[in-house]
Amino acid sequence: MHFQWYPGHMTKAKRAMQEDIKLIDVVIELVDARIPRSSKNPDIDELAKQKARVLLLNKSDMADAAVQGEWIRYYEQAGYLVLAVNAKKKNELKQINALIQEACKEKIERDRKRGILNRPVRAMIVGIPNVGKSTFINSFAGRACAKTGNKPGVTKGKQWIRLNKQVELLDTPGILWPKFEDQQVGQHLAFIGSIKDELIQSVDLALDLIEFLTKTYEGILNGHYNVQENLDSVDILRQLAINRGCIQKGNEPNYEKAAYLLLDDFRNAKLGRITIERPNER
Ligand code: G4P
Image 1 (cartoon, helix red, strand yellow):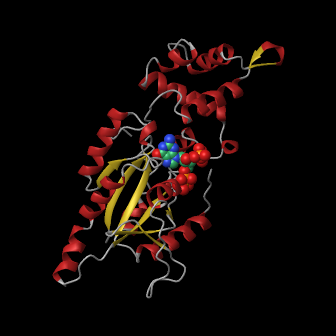
Image 2 (image 1 turned 30 degrees about the vertical axis):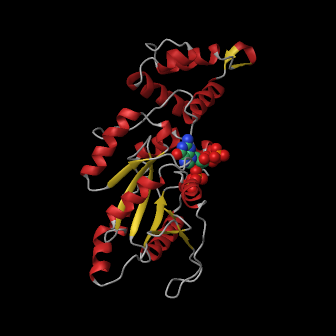
């Protein structure tokens, strides 16, 4: 689940993506609704240039609803068809289907003029690791799960799942790589738990999260841990450690344990629905 990218991985993923994209009409891109910028791979715009596009803000159940509205408008203005979803729930299928039809309407119209009626459009799910691709495919296709098998002219081994009369979905998602060169991207992916915790300093990360929360979601830390938010981040973490019994030998606060506690609570949405990124800030 946690990931790490090497240049070799990236080249391989990119090549696989280029091959799969040739087979489909519409790219359904999943991003994490809590970090809609950092969980989006900018190279996909180039890779999917000729294709219809749908963008899903996934894990919307964990994101701030008001900010989500801003992101939807932001990406709609950028030309995407956008929907906020929760891949664990199956009840959005109708809306997603409508969005796919809308995205593919030119192709459907072209087909119609040529006398081809009711040819399903072909879709594929893409996104960075851990964004919810497998969950999405299971929820939205699991039920239908009539695999159509290999088809003539289609690369051997590719399986298509018939979602309904209008849509076929490639059963393996396209894995995109995050834009790690950007430090802020790395930090935000670490916040949501998409980077191996051994690779990062959990205490530093928790301090960054404290700074963000006291600035953007005033009252949350006080409400959950009974800490004073006007202290500096290290002192807040110390109070949190003491209040939550994260104590080590010599009766000293255990910062690392407190850091994990905070990060876990945030990642499991125990602190409420929180969005890290805003459309108009960098
Ligand atoms: P991937 O294929 O893109 O790598 O992601 P995957 O589907 O494996 O999902 C990664 C984690 O995110 C899973 O949790 C999954 O349950 C969770 N997830 C996916 N979509 C949503 C969503 O819309 N809302 C919420 N709240 N969670 C979502 P996990 O901890 O790995 O497993 P588990 O908790 O399901 O056992």
